[in-house]
Amino acid sequence: MEVVTVVVVRPENAHQARLLRLLRDDGPRSRAELGDAVDLARSRLTAEADRLIERGLVENAGPAASRGGRRSPLLRLAGTVRFAGVVVSPRHIDVAVTDGELAVLSRISEPADVRDGPEAICARVVELIGKLRAELGLHQLTAVGVGLPAPVAFAEGVPVSPPALPGWHRFPIRESLAADLGCPVLVDNDANLMALGEKHAGTARAFEDFLYLKLGAAIGCGLVLGGQVYRGATSGAGDIAHLRLADDGPLCACGDNGCLEAYSGDAALVREATTAARSGRSTVLAERLDEAGELTALDVARAATGGDAAAQALVRAAARRLGQILVGLVSFFNPGIVIIGGVAPGIGPVLLAEIRGLVYRRSTPLSTGTMPIVLSDLDDRAGVIGGARLASDHVLTPA
Image (cartoon, rainbow, N blue to C red; front, side, top):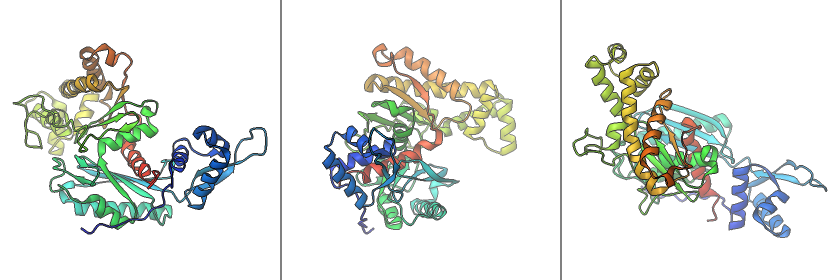
């Protein structure tokens, strides 16, 4: 595929970049407040702010509160600065458009099957973004961030040998979407995006070092160290789904046996729930199986929250496997907090209690003494907010 060069207005220097990120993260500020935050001489601050206004990245936003003299205008990111976050999962596509401060302006989600292939999914992503742009009256997006349930070579913007995305190996997603959308596109593993979303707008705002554990059809982990996503030497950091727990464990989608995902992913829950239903261990699941013809992870969650003992046992077993992996991660990385997202509705308390019990019991006191383990308060918004954050980090960095 031909590489398309997309021209985008970006800050000219580090001072401008810092001003833009402050306005993104903290909202409108007066020139005086910005000057205090970045420790710039007033003349230099004025010059840089005026230049950002000229370049269409910043605009005036009404008068600021008085600090004893004439009130100066507030500055904010320009209304033309708009980002999109996209999360592709094995079963659906989620797209949102945000303003410059990453507040979601409009969002759309629909079922999809990644087995249809990357061309079809990318075409649908472009269509959904087009719908949101039309709804919001947007001529152009500033940048787009895309998350995939797969290992992603971040520098190239391509998935690499993705078990959850058959037929997607090294498909040039970044170039394909950039050509159709006419703006920069960044592609990353979805757990990294969700970690970024938590850092920007969730519980993790107060932490520089944390782990984000993503559950669901594909398990993943986003590592944030020193306030930045840690991707590793080749962008493979955080790929915990295929860590082996047992040599003779169940077959995983990757072709190996005993992987974490084969024990604790949605497919594993459904597999074990189907066995429980057919063996007579759960009349609730058996009735649902007879009614629908097949079970889903949501069926297991509903049975568990309804008090079904077999379903609760399945959730606890999956949580214990997750806890086993987290023990090693917590001891090695020493995060300030562990945040868990992608949890099916209702089973959070059962899952969290099991994980906490194992991690706090088996990890070193120095690592866990002040470390909370919590459920995400952003729920399914973390990914699209994180996609917009990824896109904005790119655009708000000097070229």
